[in-house]
Length: 529
Image (cartoon, rainbow, N blue to C red):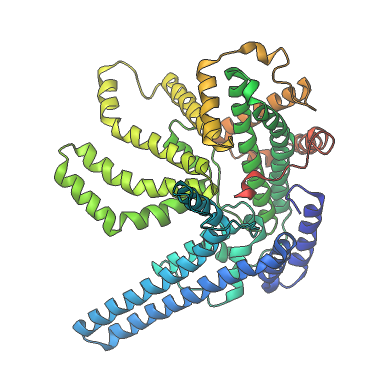
């Protein structure tokens, strides 16, 4: 039941019928049943993993809240010295609880997703000493969305541990947050307090709400079916024959992959966000015109936003308050005279873990680790050379606020992002390195017109459709970047104009979308992670 399938639309309509027909106090239960049914269709017996993961964090969070209550009670009953000892003892218990739960929860993910990867590393090292296979290789099937629900579970118990809110008493309400079907397959990474508050509200049927949700779903369909899936066929064809292509054609393939990934991922996020709006629930924002970014730092504040905020709040913060970070910080202050190094070195220590986690979260492969560390290196180089750049600009007559310089920054960032996309899409690091060398050294524009980029089942008309699709995305992106709320502003237009836009979007998706024939049913890229 893919998000772009007809059966998914039927599923939504059935859910809505029960959601708005039954008493309002039952609405959250309808969503829970729907979410578990949706999940079971994909994972079947593997559904037990999400139930177990939720149970772990439920029990752990309840224990932490209980310990916090004991501290508050003891504060009123004990003298200051005794209370101090009791609080310290309780803090150790809390640390023990969250450590055990996190290790078990993340351990399930690690075993299912990464055991073969790390096993292959160990076996590779063992082969150097002519030892046999040390770690057996298993053909494991991953439960749907395990990379997403594990992180959301960890964020929940961490927030309880930090005192952001008390543990949820109802296991099934927590299960709804973890398994909520719009975000279970590829995010966004929502926070418990934001969603639970909405789940507890009573939602009335609203025409405006239905219209806005449906419009967002349709635009997501357009992105996915018209742009992403069409670009995906070309990208697959070009990457398969990259050995025979020149650098110009490979660069085109990388550009198209960037387009494919953005249209696929953001399109699916819009489908699930629109779906959730049909039930009166708003999901977290996950994209904010990323290709208008003027630096890679800004790019990651606009691309997969909820993954970035998760890593900042739960990885960076944890490392930055650790004893290891404090030692590195003390070392930098003692041994470096440069204020810049005193600042950059501790940050580099903490950010290494952030970007390593970013990379390996995407998959059990060296290329994904390299993908994360690629951005880490770019950001650290930017921070390290920042004082030099500042001095250079101070001496030059170049204005950093000029439109020309902003355009240069956007173009530079786009190129750097595409190099990252090349690493992300290639099968191996060796392949991505070879393709990058070709891009830099083998310019061959003739392949763009002499059939060198021909892909079976693709005609020039498909390239025209993609070009028009890019224009649509660019115009909408520019309007959003200037602060326009397109759906709200469209509501203010005459009825005839509004429905013209709706119908054009619907028929463009139906007519230009790729279905069957030379096009395979393309899954959602980020659902694989």
